Image 1 (spheres, rainbow, N blue to C red):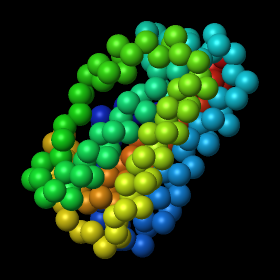
Image 2: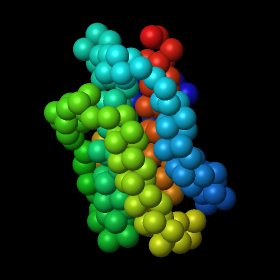
Image 3: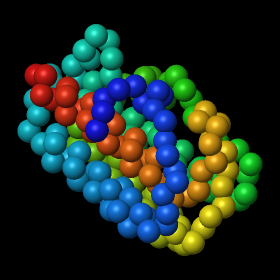
Image 4: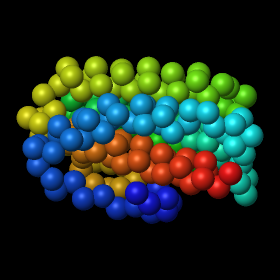
Length: 170
């Protein structure tokens, strides 16, 4: 796991459908991993914004903010849209949400609820058997639903790694 900039990452989606089970498990486990990591962390650590960057709470809130985008993109593929729905590259929804005012338990519950909705959607699709693609607008790569799931798991890992560094830096 690297805490390098997310937007600089490149992704290889050449893996086969046999990887889906492990990707699915990563998606299922992320809320629990995050909750375990943030148990008993003092409030001043959770809200600290090093060098004006996001705090632990803001990273946690960001995960739930983006969860509907992952589901929308899965629907884009199912609906055979040529290009996936774009994200706000400035992350205004996260920056303007005021997550530092929220209890960490509420942020974790929101992420869990959003992730459960994503898991329910995945459960309703034959993901390994669905080879349809749509173009990712920033990466300029075609993506399948399994690729969206992998991308989401990688995004989780990226933010969890940043959160771990913020917690260690107390």
